[in-house]
Image (cartoon, rainbow over all chains, first blue to last red; front, top):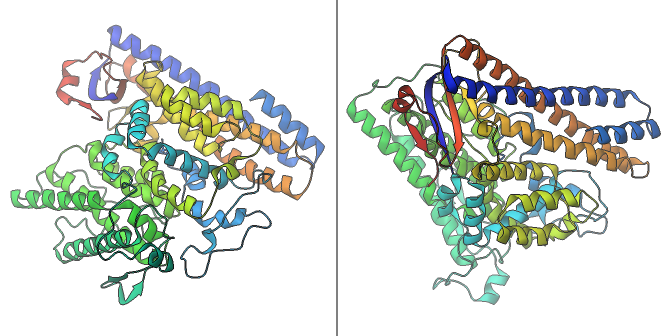
Length: 68
Length: 526
């Protein structure tokens, strides 16, 4: 059960703005961190696709799984 | 959260639509071929998956989700507990659609048990206008949880009722001109339904027309609520499926258009319970059509948002649940042993941890009994991850924005939500996609542990595709969130008025300015 609030919020200053900013920091940090991971993953996948089949590919994938 | 929700690439890959249609591909050697003549099941009969069959297709794992759902849904109390625990507000709406009681007194005309066994299709169904020639229905076997005659009667009644409703709707003059916006028969295809981009026109109609819009919408809603999903599910698996789909397509199109007219005529903001019935239908379509419920709902929400409404949808788990109930019965009927589907080496600990994290103890114990020694597919895990997030939110353990913050129609420059869905659940999706990505990467690594060969290559290829798609979608969500937070921050710094949606766990006090209060606070769920 949760509430959904719809509203216009004046957050020019004060605690409300500060709290919101803190939350935004957290949101942005998390998003950035994951964005970077996904970008790195996509690059790795591209590299893996270029590798010849068999062992090299397997090794790269296994290493990838440890990183992620 | 079918799910849900879940518009975009993941839906396309993970919809339940191909669940049944793709099952035949997963048969192990030695499995009896195809269905029995005339049973209407075709290739869906006797599908079994070899325990050693690795990761060829994800649909194998989705079935577990279905069965898992059924096990929960089998007891309405347990289901209510489960979804209540998840805090899913939709469950209360969906509960009228709980599976019908197993035992129903047979009607007078019901054949005796031996006669039923001999004939599983005792009734002829007339579909006037669509099938001028009466056709014999071929229902899935006799053990689908009801006496065949009562079941067929429900089918017949339901189809007739829907036919009559649609005929009456066709005969009515269009109220707002919206009715033809979604051409019947196009739902479930990859068409993006375009609504008018005009802004809401509150007051564009007379009082009488407003009343008419309300009546039409209520009638459509009543019709939807009266639908027997078990019966329709069976029909959609029978030879009459094209007819049934046509009817349902038309009905869903009508429903959406009617809802749209209603909202527009009354100039009211949509409420989530207006969408729930659509989601119920989507639940069926998740299983039976090439599109997923999430995609359908996202299209609906997008279309409505383009018209200036703020539509939030949560096509999460509960939506799927109703469809799962009957489908699970179907699966049992065609002798699929869930354990056959699940036996393989996988991240058992991960599943157990997730599941035990997910539910309250009583439900958890049941889930664990089923998941021990088994594995879940990554898509199921995606949904379960959403359950888990919901639960954490409900318990106040999820403190980062509660998964929700979204600017809509506000003055934040350049902010153009892709869809209601992507905003509403963006942080939840970030979490779920990340989890899903991790699972996929690990699965890929396990595939490379297999001996080299065609099977490994095939599994790896499929996983690569899934992984890339998931990573791209996750990256998109992450980018979206970064941009969004930047814009909100900019607005705060500039003292701009920000209009946004916030979701809090139950009862969490929120500082409300006067302007907020004037916009109202809505409680979802019951």
